[in-house]
Image (cartoon, rainbow, N blue to C red; front, side, top):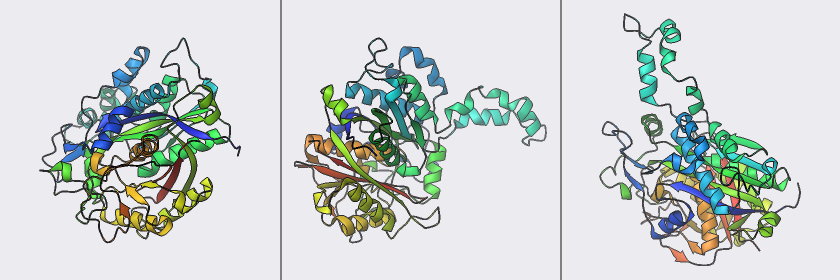
Length: 434
């Protein structure tokens, strides 16, 4: 491992409360809430009918004209990642093939991509028609008819819309990124792990710049059903969605599905300085761990989260007292919020803790990237975000929850990401660059 320093020089949030650094930062500071009744499909038959939905989003606005035909083979998750990468690269000021093909100032062999992805849902209308055309005269599905007729009702490139590695694939093609590229599929921990891997890629001198983060959309019938069957969604706020997600609050009863994510530009510090880039923060450490419970059970004792935090501190060569703020993952789930809070208290003591899930909901693989974006903004803009909807802190969550926006110099922020099932945990530490 070399002693190269890694900084964040570009932010690309795509969220229910804003797209782009400025819009997202203003929304976070104002406490804006993007959770509302679902309009992407008719939700009346579902117990939970609300979501953090992105309105008026068009992928073509973020794709070079020469590449727009490829949008037809992009699922919503891919579109979000492509847009986030475009926003991040433009914010960083670097010029890739997609931004200015005649004036590229990045060596493509030193540009990497790491993106966290979730389980992409197939277009149900498209798939249903193909399946229906494979029904025999007795009204039963026929493999023979599927092979001769049904499958022909799907486009030849149909599968490419739904492979989780397609988020990274499209971004690498669009920006001509030829350094190490990877896709991380570890549920809600995916984008933390993707950013951590990109950090190591630059530290080990395998790239100078990495586009890293995650994106996912759970706003589809299958995404909603899956989360509800897992017991993760609130059913009591369909009429008042702005109050639905209540991180660390004693009255929390579940989260809301969402869509979005973020890509951040990680860059070798010397390179960023040489081009006078705006540096939001430096990534100084990361730690990962894994719970030992059944893959569908959350590690409720918080030990895995504690280990990840401890490893991140060790990696950054920092002490608990050095951390000014924690951007927690808390999404309003009873067991998970409590375990996270207890782990933070055990390792970091009375440090201020904020969660933005009350504003945007939880979209899985993209949530952690939005948390890390918030952490970078907290350092660069000197503030502690409000934890929206946390009115009465639960006794089972013994942490110093920030319930009001505070203007304060923040020098070091720890962020936490963990999968609700599967056991993956990752903590990443950001520090003011000096």
